[in-house]
Length: 472
Ligand code: GLC
Image (cartoon, rainbow, N blue to C red):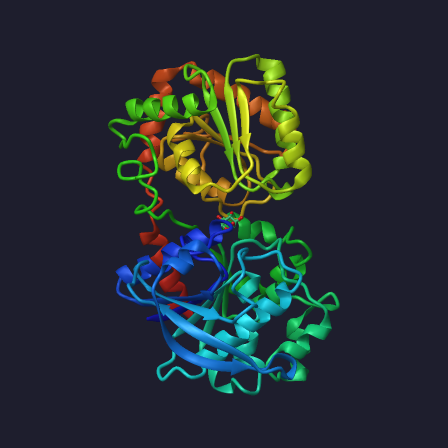
């Protein structure tokens, strides 16, 4: 099959979160099992994108609100990622340093999608499926089906993957002027509660919708940031497909970003060496268990509870562990996290940044990874942790529920709790401390976790099966 993925992010070219990891891996595995998968994304001004060599494959123009806007489609020359990568280049509009967060984001992403559809309409040979990711690409199915200039695309099948339904791309009706000339009878397909809602539009217009874990799909029917009714109504075309891990990037045996490589046979020693180095870097005592949190410091990840939980855990259990936080996000959370640093000096540290290299070193060197998420569509960090023999401590939600089994249960290996509360987090840290005192058991768990196979091969095939269910 021939598949075109449309996404705002793609690892390592431009990454803000897990979406990039998925779009950087899934197409590669689809190609490996004999399909032709390509990715198109905006040409952001990131170091990685600017380092590559590109060839121009198409030049065209779009007319948002009647304004002539030139765009160029460029293709990465060396097949570096294992699939064809295309970028939409629009001077001044898309080539910015950040992926999101500008006042004109609505305009930027409308133009990106408009240009993708315009380019696609000129392909000699159309793809079998256009696979769009999250709301930034959510208008594509509507543009392909209900705009006058692109009528010829209306027969191509479309799939929407939802990596996060919290963000929906809401915009006022004035923005509809920027769209390619569209069938006004179809306004209802764009609308959700008096606004244009690109995520809702994609759920309505795509042939199939999937979320990145089965549990998250079930949760959305009851809690979807306002879209519950829509998910209930469209349930029939929705499924959940668990994300995989790109073993070429995430393998402690070959990872060049970590201090010492190891596999499941050498995990005890390997972890110890990586832990010693990490502890040295942060002034921690490496004889104590090391807990880490890696991720965006936002409410969705329950990062607002971290300062309270960390404080309380130290008060309750004493100076018996180390805690390292990596991530950035909401100002208030960052402030509170740094406010407690003085109090637990030598035992607790935070790094407010997005740092891919340090994150690898933390998976390799930590004993426990805490993920108290309120919402977690799939969660990749717990999968990386498993791969590196780090015990995940997770709230039972979304993909965390589908991938972590509590040590108290049959075949278990992790620590699970039910509520995103300080009490549950502190209690779970206590369970972890107790577990850590049984080193034999910890060693067995590490080996067990590392043998779990969450590679992309299976999920890549699940997506192909999903396409086949709509494509004949
Ligand atoms: C988003 C979700 C995360 C998921 C990732 C990739 O970042 O928050 O749970 O794993 O997308 O699908």
